[in-house]
Length: 86
Image 1: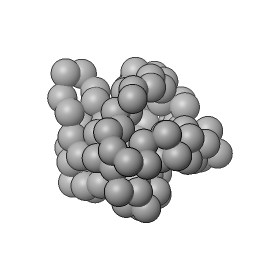
Image 2: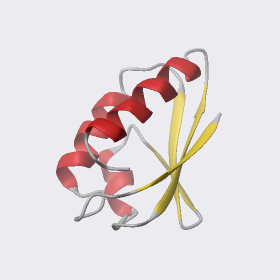
Image 3: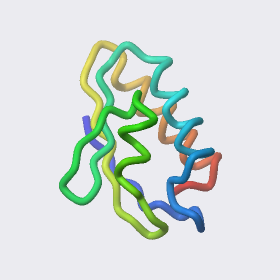
Image 4: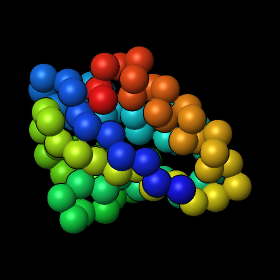
C-alpha cells in the first residue's frame, strides 16, 4: 500500500515533525518506509528520516506492508494532516 504526500511545512520534515512521525510509525507492526527522491528509508528510524533532508514542497511516498497496513496508513495520513506537514 502506497500513498503520496506533498510536504507543506515551511521547514520541511525537520527534527520535531520527523520525531512525531517516527513515533506514530512505531505504533504499528507493519514495515513502513518513507520514499523521497529515489531513496527509501525505514519510517521507524529517526536517523533514516532526517538523512533524506525532505524540504517544503517535496513529494514523498509512504509505503506500508504488513498485517495492520490499512490502519497504519489511515493513522499516519491523519497525523500528517494534523501536523500540517502535507
